[in-house]
Amino acid sequence: MLTLLSKHSLIDLDIRAVGDLHVDAHHTVEDVGICFGMALKQALADKAGIRRYGSMILPMDETLVTVAVDLGGRPFCVWQAELPCEMLGAFNAPLAEEFWRSVSSAGLLNLHVILNYGRNSHHMIEAIFKGTARALRHAIETDPRNPGVPSTKGVL
Image 1: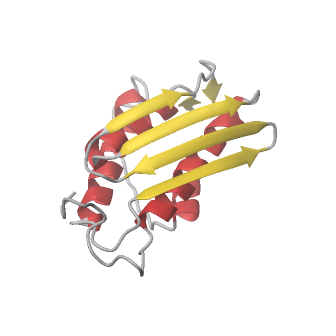
Image 2: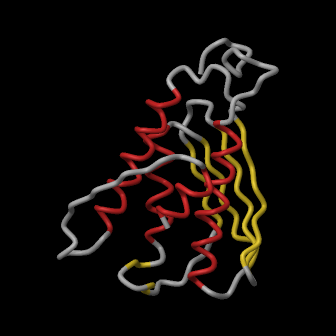
């Protein structure tokens, strides 16, 4: 899923994580989300010249996901995606929510994820990662018409 995130957001990622996987993946997934959120926040600095907002409606086979992002500096995550509690390889499906909540919190961004419908857990999670990546891609793109900070307050 991190490869999908990198590919579809156009954000280069080089992630190496060591955690208490002998217990379970929860803390490691959460920590990777925190690190990604912090790195995103640091890379965008004062956010001058970016679009700030991004959204995507993404189909993935029988699944449809809607994602919206605001890089406005206030963390909030709305997660309307009921995922079955099942293992996908070594990944417990509900950990997708923990990852994105951690990204939102550490990256100081609003993230709204709505799983409109779907049946296959793998497709649902894949669509969430691709849709969020595409929304982030749009939000971090430079806006040639607005080189300043995208806020009437002048700071984010």
